[in-house]
Structure formats: C-alpha cells, structure tokens
Length: 230
Image 1 (cartoon, rainbow, N blue to C red):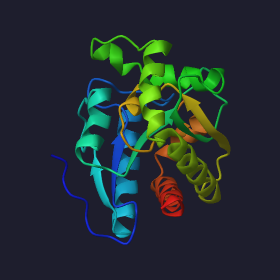
Image 2 (cartoon, rainbow, N blue to C red):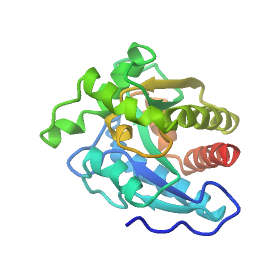
Image 3 (spheres, one colour):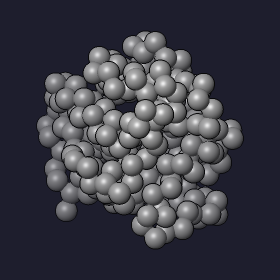
C-alpha cells in the first residue's frame, strides 16, 4: 500500500526526484570526462534540499551511484503515492556548440529531431536492462491510458512553469518545453517531467554543471516552478 501523504495546505505534498543514470550507466560524458550520472545526483540532492525547506516531502529514486532500471523509477513514484515525478538529466549533442536547458513531458511523437535524439539517448539504459526500446505503437497504448487521467496536460502546464522560472535564474538560454517518448516517464501515474539541465557536450556548460552556485540556481528555479504550479 502507498504511504499516506503528509497533512499540508498545499496540493503538492510529495515529489519523487529521479537522478538519471547511475551505476553501470554513466549517461553522457563531457569532453573533460565529467559523467552525467554524478552531476544528476548532485542536482537532485540540491533540488531535494530546496524543496524540503519549503516543507515538501521528497523521495529520490537513488541516493548513490546505483543502477536503477528505468521502469523501477516511475514505479517507485507510484508506490510512494507521489504528486509529481521529476527526472533530472544533463543534455548531450554531436554539436559541441549547443547550449541551454529544456523541459520535456511524455508524448508518442517528438517535438523535433533534437527531441527525438534526446529521448533515444535517455532511453539507452534499456539495452543495459536487456530490454528493447518500445515501439511508437507501444508508447501510444500507454499514452491512451495516461491521457484519461489528464496527467500529460498537467505535465505540460508544469513544464511551462518550470521552464519560465528556470529562465529567471539561469543565464543559459531556454530551448523550450518539448515532447518526446521518454521511457522513464511512461509508467508514472502522476504529472511527470524530465529536465535537461545543460549540455555536457559543451565545454563551458560542462564546467557550469560542476559549479555549486549554478546547481543552486537551477534548484531554486525549478522549485519556484513547482510552487507556481502548486
């Protein structure tokens, strides 16, 4: 049975934060060798601290360098009866010049080729689990059940607010709110978004991601987006 939610005047009382990748799955690796899995955990811990200061209960899908299957991440959020599921990642591109942050919610069709490539990159751990990447038809079947609960519409609204408030805190440009078939989001039974913080493939942003003050600004912007949604 799911744990009961804490008493609170707020609608958003419990959030599951998912630091992407971990363990045998390093995620993207920057030109100076910085691994995404380590940065994601630092970002998630920073965000958890800020949210807890606002009396929101926070559960992390991993608290150390552990490999967690993608499906298990949203399943944890469901078991925890979470109000929101937020997956934290660093972006990567074949172009070393791309920069900025972007916010995603689930869709069977990607917003653009970059969104599709990003989802393929973040779905890559499925190969480490011995699973095939789901076909568009499989994703569409999941979406039909999710749309009934309006979670995708809610995730879209949350994404817009998170994007806006991140933009107020970060000097990096917003690349917008987009849609793509992220496997980690598909099982969530609550509004779920995936945030790509900055590009590890860009040397300047790789350096930024290692900066504690940048990570603090990111956490503050994201938490303000959640508060605005609440």
